[in-house]
Image (cartoon, rainbow, N blue to C red; front, side, top):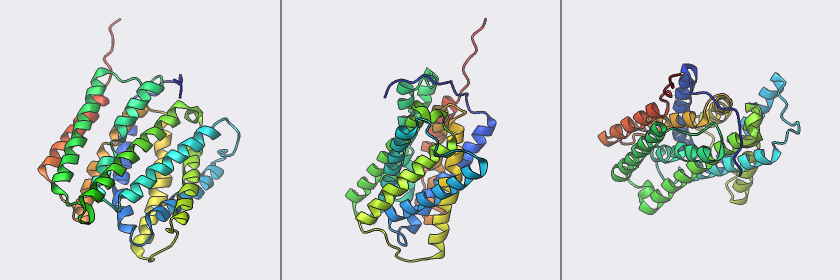
Length: 311
């Protein structure tokens, strides 16, 4: 992928910051919703249904607003690639949550901003980071590392197996890499000039096909039980997360610096662990509070305004 010159996006203002905090809370609850539904819907089938429902919603939204989704604008190859990456991310998330806890998955998934910032730094003009911002990235990454150590020392291995727990954690990191790669593709290709609806429609449609095909091939295309919790969880994932929150996320990417927005997602594991404590009874410790402080410090540094040069 070659370096692409694109108009510089501005730093997040107060409106973008409030939106990002709301998105982080929504995404933090997502891990709990997925894990609580795995017993009723096999993970890949659940992920495929989620994408398929959200794709239909995005199509309806775009149609109501007169936004063209099928016009030939040179984004097909990039859109398909982004969709495959998106599918890979959710294969890792949904399978990983059968092996590790929701809190640990939230922590490892949100290594994504580190990979995003690195990818944008190399492939997208206008996303270069200043020294103080890199200090922020490293501070936030240190917080993530501390959070990992806390989870490893205090959280019992998933289903009694250390190897299974490590495999689940590794899938969380791979999901973070796939998410970061998707963001870079969106910013470094013609998708950067496409509408948020079309960008999201590519990812949801391709991922629905890939995930449902995998579920069918692996014998997961079945419903174990229909429960109110499973229905509510699937509705939350499809409507609130995959439709509303992603549409807002891609809209933000068209207007603000992606590297600065991505660092806000370090808040998501904080929400994720909090929801895990409140809803699933997972552990919470002083070590995690220290990790949270490092993460918040990193966010503040990455979003520090540039100094004005005197005339």
